[in-house]
Image 1 (tube, rainbow, N blue to C red):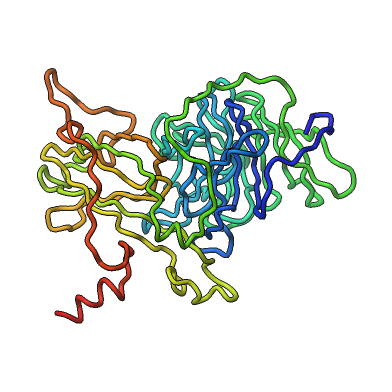
Image 2 (cartoon, rainbow, N blue to C red; image 1 turned 60 degrees about the vertical axis):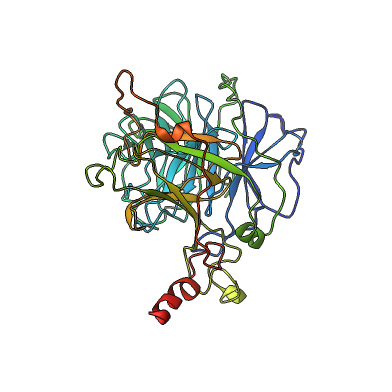
Length: 436
């Protein structure tokens, strides 16, 4: 639609909900959609994932493998996409799992931007880069419920989990935002004019009605617009030319999205893969794990849900989840770790995966506390496991390339449990007890 209110045109079609559109520097459009028809881990709602399409709505591609929901994508100053990702993680605090993540517009280079273990606030919402600055402005709000709370600034140069005062600070008056505490009339929709001034929507000045305010970086606010009657106002933005961020060339071979039933996604591989290479798994986990102890990298998948968690007829009517199960996992397989700690292996693309380090007997030495994805044809490398991303791998003159990098990537090997790798207690574990 034009800024004059004319020329309204529908872009996407279908029996799905498409929200939060973002115009990318390339001219394509990113948006959140529930068209995959999968369900979040512990709620009765469908998962909204990130997709891109052409300006006419064609050429839809899925650029997320999250098993939960992605929210409010925005373009960063360097051309990457910043968004809130619901990362349930691997058996850790579920209330501190709405953090800021970044990736390229084609879905490659997914990585945590900030706050996956911060507990107050419970969520970092609706983040936008400040023009010409490394900080982002966002809503510091609860884990669920309204994307409303306090306005805050985030800076990740001291690490993605830096504490309050180093990695983030409250701009508006602080109220603790643990867990699911709701602030329906709190601050929302911060749009940065510069590093000191922001446009916001706020409903705490009477009448339970959201008005538009000019807010400074010390928390002072002035109402600049309110609608007549009981109407509220949200999502302010400046109508003015802006510098277009750089276009990041695509780094994958992601085919157009085609609908597949969740049951099929969970049981029939589509043949799409990416490649991971680890230079030295001991970087970041030594001295807890001694050289020579680590023998395998275990590739795990968190399986997408084909039915909702609870309520109505969904209880007990899904062949994969079972009544009340939150996490369902599949073993993709084991990739060998070379004597120098390096590994080079393939992983399924557009799947929610995590990695664990095992010893020679298959005992877990270290696990990945979050999850990730790669896109078809993408190649990702890391220095080590849990290494400091702000540092680098120490090398000496004449040092050899990692052993694994001199070999083709391996396909992780998986034992045949008769379940396609699914961790099914009744079929995989109970027979061991019965036999012995």
